[in-house]
Image (cartoon, helix red, strand yellow):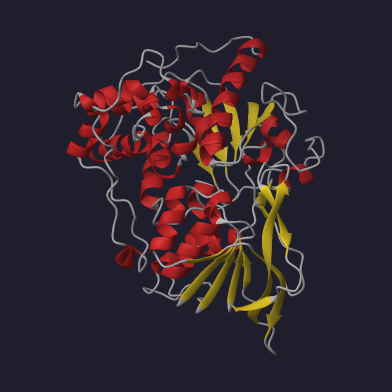
Length: 468
């Protein structure tokens, strides 16, 4: 069996100096060679591992046959954001995990092939015409992140009149403010969103639903159903002494400043964030890796990533960990902060830590870190970034009391993704999704249920075959 084609990437000492893409993408020859490794299983297990139900063998076969136009058609039957998913989706834990080749060799590089197909389409297919017949039924989508964009795209393909309401000044949600340019360039995201606009989807920016407009306002304006995909924007903190000192950021704030305020364009103009010399990132997920690698690119002399377990327990993707280490990020494992120290002006200067050891497994199945008494030590730090995870966006539920949440702040939805408000559906991080592709899967399932709901509750139900 031929070996898996490795994704080409730039040299670490070159790429950690700028915000250009790390992975450079397959050539046509590489894509065709990799596609030919696919066994074209009669019962493809890989599809079962895809939250958006892509016909994986179908699009891969078209690549192997050099029918790239057909390949993107197959992809977009299920996935409205293939160039995004091909870059940031954790395929190793989903579709590729179930690839039968992975039992004796390496699984098909499904994500790399998805990226190749999407990038080929962006370069070779221009000015797609919208042939979808409108049914005149208005639907509002709250939030333009992966869940909202997916839901909007699927419903637009069924002929609905979709308006997306976004509280920020641009679309994309976490795809724009939470993922660095070197992993997901803004021009790639913009191209994906432009294909959705070509379906007739409209965007309203700087509009906070619950404050600028209420949900009732949307129904009064003629929207027949609402999807809420407001994401997870509430950062977690350590709640230890000194956490409010200057130059201690949540990863959410740090990456938002870099992405939305164009700090990644440094040194063309001054960045709207303090660029420290000794940066410490606390956490072990993908966001921690993104923050550490971003800090390095902003000019930090030293970037340390502090994690209370070992690298083996880190939730970050293996590729992201590998890239971080290659780019000079130092991992300090089995370590936890207990206190921050500051200079006379209130700026952080160091972090007091303790060493940890792994005990019995906790609720997550991972061994619980236990503090080693008397192991305290200091780490110099003039910038600290807390990448400890996010909670559901609390703004909308706090403004709309009839939207019920559970003890963790997630919107309560039923098996059809409907909230306690009739005709109001939800998905993505605000309803329990934890990754981009999981949010997209929830948006897709919600769209199906919204379509069924509207067919049942509107006197003139839309035609399932509106496209054409």
